[in-house]
Length: 445
Image (cartoon, rainbow, N blue to C red; front, top):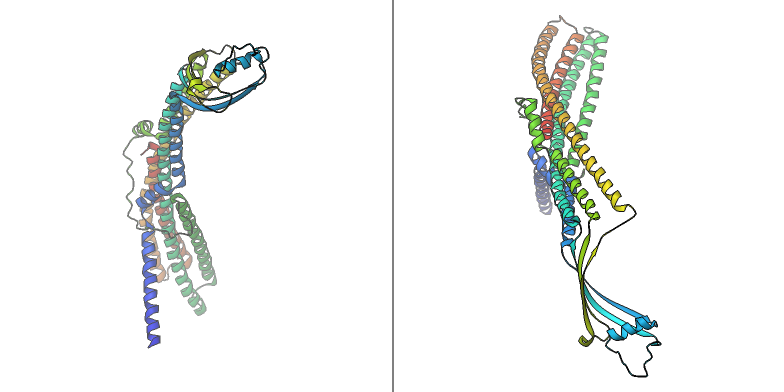
């Protein structure tokens, strides 16, 4: 009875583990859209871009802080035997005594403690604070656009790697079919060779063909693992986590209906990279304006409230307030301001050249992706016809071989031609899909 109970527990535990494993597997099976969504949520590069946006927002807060007053508290202590200094301390402490015993020329050591609160406010700094704040605002917009560009690049990379994985899966299926067909033929040929109806050379040819098919199998398996590893990296998934790809293959081929000029205009209007480059030009211009502001006068208002005493006792009978406005202007700073302006000009020139380079790169990317789509679609058309012809040729050769009118070598050639035509057709189809993903990224979709 106890043994039966243990068996029931074992069966129940096994069923539970199997169901848990199945559930985990189902939860980690991704189609293309799910893979893209997961990558856009968990890829570390996008998280870095989000942190850069937060960093740019913080930089704006720092720039805006210059428009607020600066308030400080401090406590100072001073000891002096200088008659004029000591006399000033005594007056500030409200301890001036005109008695004959007081020697103003020899007051002795005098102590002064001063707790105070000071506030200052920048009235004008040549527009530097304004231009720096505008530069910081543009920095947030540029960081946001850079994140969008990273999203586009990540989407394209996930799509291309996803298609590469599916292409490797399909190629592996062809290699399996080829191995199975050659193995069956080799088995029959060996029997016929033992019976004396097949030449030794035919058997050897089949063995060579089997080795080639097995070599192809090794390559396809490696391609599958490489594509899977690359996809896991893009999705931010560890290699130790459960991960499966939805292998359903009902992909629609892209349509190449849009002319190149329309695609290029669309890219120039919405590619985040070109928009970011233009923002960088505006930022550099604002920084140049800020550097020029150093040549203008600066005005600050200030106020100080405190108390002077010979000890740390605070009394409103000894408090005092000082307020004023200070205007200053640099006459000579060792050419520092001049070089800052020169540096800002070079930064602006770099931004303008970078924008031009970005424009050229986008033009090249759109043109290349558009040509790849057209090429892949043309290859699909050709290879589809090739598959039909290769299948028919293999069928005819197989019938002729059964009738004994062709050699094994001719059959092998037809078999290889059929497999290669299927492989080329699969490669062309997935190349078209990858080219479509590249074109979408090139135009900023």
